[in-house]
Length: 169
Image (tube, rainbow, N blue to C red):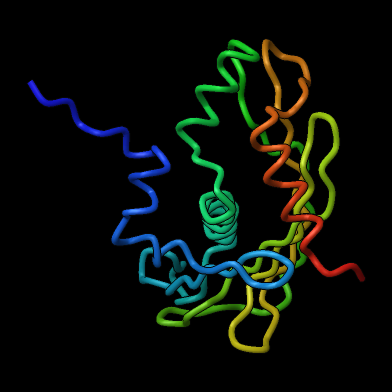
């Protein structure tokens, strides 16, 4: 019987006809376009505040995908290095600047700020054209069995390379 290919293998990702949906790498990071749908809004037609967290999570995930971190392989490596692992958002600072509304096309900008032993800090902005909608600083930690652990080597290498390519302020 033929087995299905691993959907996260590098060969499958390279051949992914929908990879363009993952946004694009730009100098300093990644940009993901997101259209605001009815389901993203509250009763007044404005994006519900918690949905920005979802948009930014997609931006972080697709940033990883485009810098070559195959999440299925990463999870396999992490499981071998640290059984019972998890990636957790350790902290998040948010500034809501202006509202976004139904049918707006937003861009989620993700830029690495720091790669430390057990955490990665990212800057994220949600913009509508030139207008800043939300700004965030996100620290993601790697934990196993309730304790902080060193980030797996594959993720560390990819994020350090992305950080080195980011313009410095």
